[in-house]
Length: 303
Image 1 (cartoon, helix red, strand yellow):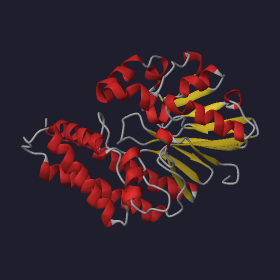
Image 2 (cartoon, rainbow, N blue to C red):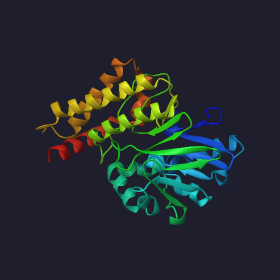
Image 3 (cartoon, rainbow, N blue to C red):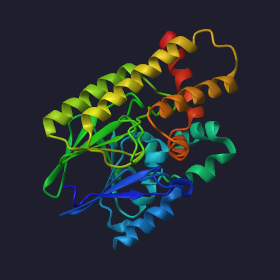
Image 4 (cartoon, rainbow, N blue to C red):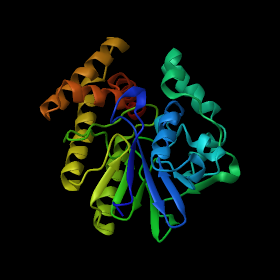
């Protein structure tokens, strides 16, 4: 299966190894796991063209969740005929992304369009709802959907052959690095659910004989036990940091963002991440965004 799987680097913001889409040609068509944002559609088209393909050749798109860096170009591919598969809870936002886009614009402000580009709606008759355990045949190989909340309530991971596409719930990791970060973007961070999803990923690894993980940020990794251990440590460290620092925090948003950045960079440095690699982690998983997500998580947990 690995010999047919292709990692497409979408060069988000003209940087390598930030956002991936995964291409899987099969006997009945061409599947794409993740699409990247609307802003990277030209690069996606170039990557397809380099392989003798056009957007019209993509028959299925599987989205781990509907955040713009993962699903923003889904409507573009739907316009060319692709069927879009996603968690049943996320489907309404693909059919009508107005609320999703309004929420994102409140966060990104004037940077919204440059970062994420345009997101087109997906026609209802091209949307397929997925539930935990659903399978979709891709040629002779079944793709299995796993319900894996934690980063988002509507997050799914996908098992195809001996590879698991983990979206954001499997963490953020850069090529040639061992450091695993938690993507903590608001508004739905739930560390208890994340722990359960990690258990589900470990169980799936045993059940399916997985040999590789494929997080959207970024690439293929074959050290599953070690990766899962680092992911577990990241979950526990985030929960501990929030419990120690956030109760009674009254120093303001900017100070919180500085504190989270310092904490995240210190963890990365402890794992051997140098300045250039840290820049890639920061672009894939901005620490200022993690500050917003952690604060919302803690407020929700203690409400």
